[in-house]
Image 1 (spheres, rainbow, N blue to C red):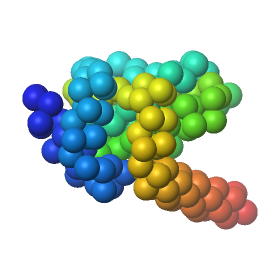
Image 2: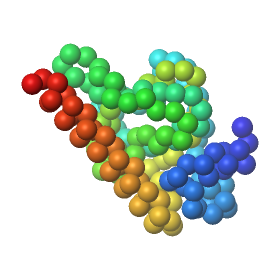
Image 3: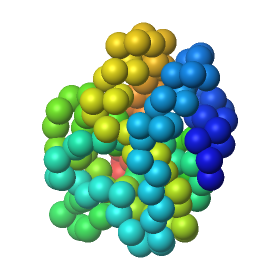
Image 4: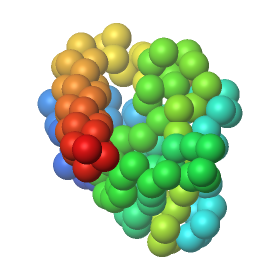
Length: 150
């Protein structure tokens, strides 16, 4: 894929939809494109967070370690933005992301991400929206789990 194709892919992601193409081109150029095969981990729960990932193609699952083994909490695909919690909060990874099929991602370093948020506050607002949606989804899952135990 070319830089222009990466820019087009970024434009389709709500997080970056309002960012001007020249800045997206810079972001695509400054990001690292990586590919993973099924079973490969983009990162592991507990690792130091150094980057976030945008899934350009393929699919992955998000796993959380539990005493009974890994628990799948979500499936993600093209357009998903993963790993941002660790770079936003400067905490170890809160989950493991594992490819379930061949996957292509853009790896965005912490420095690049914060530069983009500083230049485009709308990205920060969109990140908050995405995180709020995840919290609501998790709350729904918790309510359902508690109701099922009764």
